[in-house]
Length: 157
Image 1 (cartoon, rainbow, N blue to C red):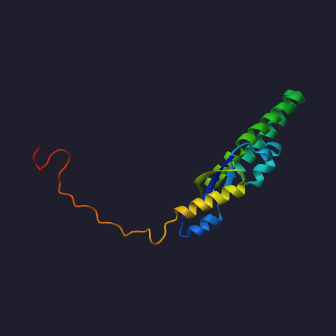
Image 2 (cartoon, rainbow, N blue to C red):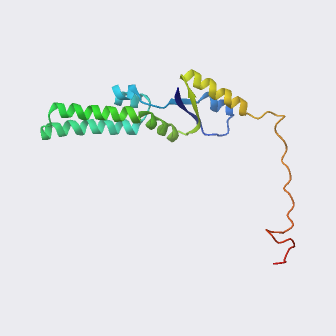
Image 3 (cartoon, helix red, strand yellow):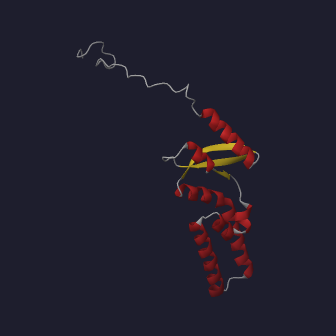
């Protein structure tokens, strides 16, 4: 079973059904696409800041390897470490990018697949949606007589 974070656009003047249509399900865990193709994965998912940071790190590694005469094996090891780091953090960065775009974390669902996570989330959301019969008018607040704490009469302290 995997965990899926469900992100919905922040509530505005639209209906909640419009929010559910734009729901984003992000699987928690290692990103193989982020590991194998770090910059392409980040650009595809519009994680611009981290894509620029990874590209700058690649350029810096290349410049340092030529300037300092670093061996190709050390350069390859640094690239693999960078790929591993992106694979581990890519989905977290994607969630942060969604939050910057106006989404908010709505729920966390445990499911086998994305389709199963969607089904469970929407089923739970439908069960929580109030019906017209369950909505009661607000009750008036109880009257206060000015008695506080252990004192039975007003002003007897």
